[in-house]
Amino acid sequence: MEWNKGEQEHLKTGANLKRGLEMVGGRLYVTNERLYFKPHSINIQKDDLDILLDQIRMIEKSKSMGFISNAMTVTTAEGIAHKFVVAKRDKVIDCIQSVKA
Image (cartoon, rainbow, N blue to C red; front, side):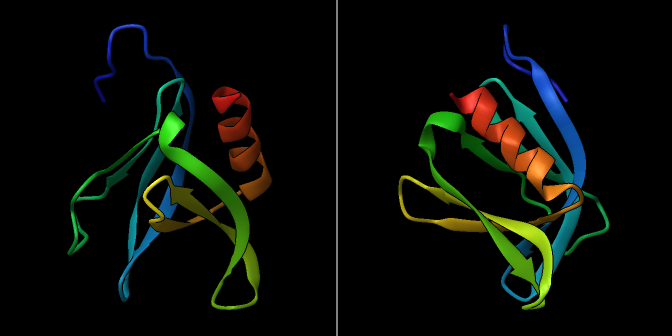
């Protein structure tokens, strides 16, 4: 990954991003500027997701499959909700919130 000048990576973790019916596997990065998702090449949907931290309006704990407490939903200023399934969800949310603050 190439970051902007002055951009620093704070967290990198495996994640799945819900896109329609597909759970897109990849890596989720938290930097001092953005939340960045890079899908694995084996997925059908291969587009990266790049959300500037100042565009994040809300981060909520959510559940995958309706009952597993391992997901988070990130809502942007445009009202678009992105659901991620991650290990150590609380750690990821805390990192995003502390870097955003």
